[in-house]
Image (tube, rainbow, N blue to C red; front, side):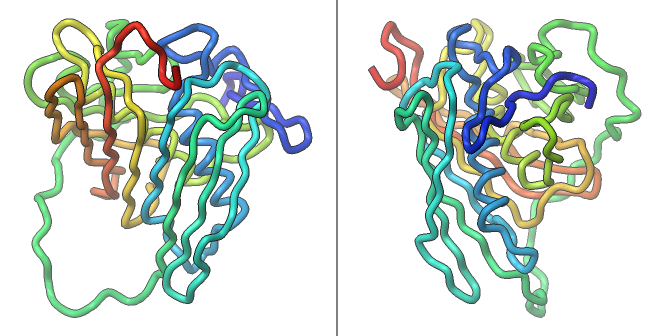
Length: 261
């Protein structure tokens, strides 16, 4: 990755770089970096090769600025088959988000077959040209290979995305961290309409039955509904081998007040 990292370390603090700026306010942190940093720190401190991080839920109740960030964690349950870890994201010393991550022990699969939706059949990212339409570049935060549709289009929306910079300087991205960084995009990808993106998500939930293999993660919009200014969004997640899980979000209509006001 040749691009500058999102964060640099200063002891136990994380210092956001210019690339961390979010879409709602140039002085704010992008939501996907909150999810990604929380997921990466939970895994680094509490991960176990015998366990799969099967669910990560992040509640984002304030819009952080570009201040020094910290992530605190604590183990809620440490069982033989299930482990639950809570985390808190602080910016400038102020709590901005909280999270819960559930780890499940890997075991042999049970006997029998269970129905699953058919696997998607799409071109590999290496077989798709990089986009030239600014709509499809996602602000340069990712490498993107559009499959069908785009944000705001009617009809199906599918794409591949890959990271172009490290989350934290000097640290390799784990498969789980890649998925956590991608998960927040479920909201704008599913919630954008023909008048642009009018919803800002207040949470993200990532489900994985296995971490992604390789650098590319595929996203497919499978749900958007809204009433009274409250929307829900869901995307299925894929890698080159097949389906890996889903990402979902709750969102509220953009108004004159910022989150946390």
